[in-house]
Length: 83
Length: 143
Image (cartoon, rainbow over all chains, first blue to last red):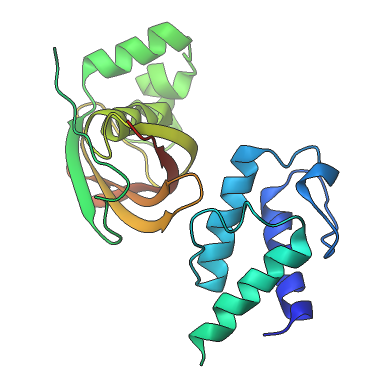
């Protein structure tokens, strides 16, 4: 899986979770989306773990600054599964 | 003082299953109808319900949600639970006196927010059919 594929899948997840339309880009952060509160953040993480079949470690998602960094962790975990 | 089940996040195992039986009794039906005032004829008028194709008065779907609330807070995971979201698909109607089994399977554990995702089945043991299914996200609070 590459970044573009991960971004496209993330867009599908955002479309499912957020009521308002959100265009997912690597620069996007929670500060850019009013609806993106702590509860939706949890829903987002739950969905990402489920769809990508990965597990995040404690605190690593919270340490990211934007979607691009989030994708880096996703790809690290997804691609590690196929090594 | 009543004691409550107390499952910590670390104790909960993925794929573990928990179940409990409930009965849709007159007290549950009457209390929900009186408190929330949903006296839609489908729920209170037997003749109307039968003419609409049902066997008798259809019990409010929210009764299942009430059982679910009890299940989560008082059975599994217990007192540390904080419900974040619930989705329930109602598949078949329930009637007064039906016995319902809630079967919950731990589908997912998520470290962020210490959340467990439970897959839910509401089995109507009176009819032998699946009455409803769903999913619930529960945060397990530290104590």
